[in-house]
Image (cartoon, rainbow, N blue to C red; front, side, top):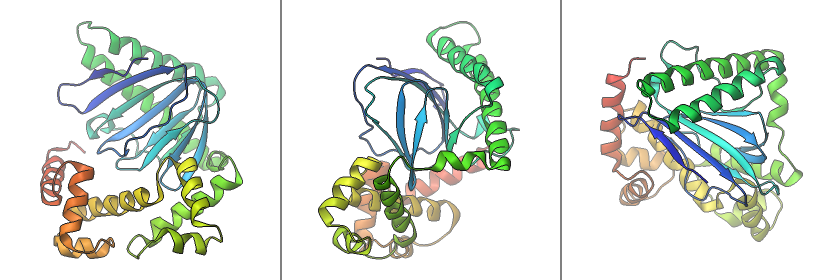
Length: 283
């Protein structure tokens, strides 16, 4: 198993490759300040994004928008090989507007090209040839353009809707629960109350939500609230107490504590960094 193969000097681009022979599910809180492109060389994975689970098969890409909550989970198949490209705004300069998060399947005639670019990126990341950074950036931009075109073509023909289908009835119910949290995060969201809303027991909801999404129920509620807080910090001038009220977290001290635990910085520091980064962005 290999992990990070390459990270740019400015930290704006990273290539992470893994080939696993056993079972594995992401355990850490997962959302990025940048975007992510995931490619599955072999195996099969469930990929939870925001409020739904996608079944990802070998030869498929997953595009993740900035700040999107996501986790990968086992499907019962113990082996998989994948590569993850994390990147910031500079990689998107002059490309078409990125698609929404989700699975992207290239047209049959283009699949060999997509995998060849992904393999070439892995090989380039392992080496130290002159101009490696420039080559990795060029290859990644070419791959992104290929994936974006396929995503927009699928959206136009409604083919991509099939990828949104959840793997089972339990996954569909838990997707509804996640969507409910996404709409009602500002309200009190106790496990027992939400379980009653969906006509299941608290034990069933707790167990199935974790199994289908990779997140504990309370953990997911907190992450959705903090994600909205991040948006408000980036896009508004609201005071911290106002943001805490809008996302459903009681005393502002609790908001500060939770935000810092999940982000590694205070809300005010996050706002300053985001606005400084936006001022420097080429987009």
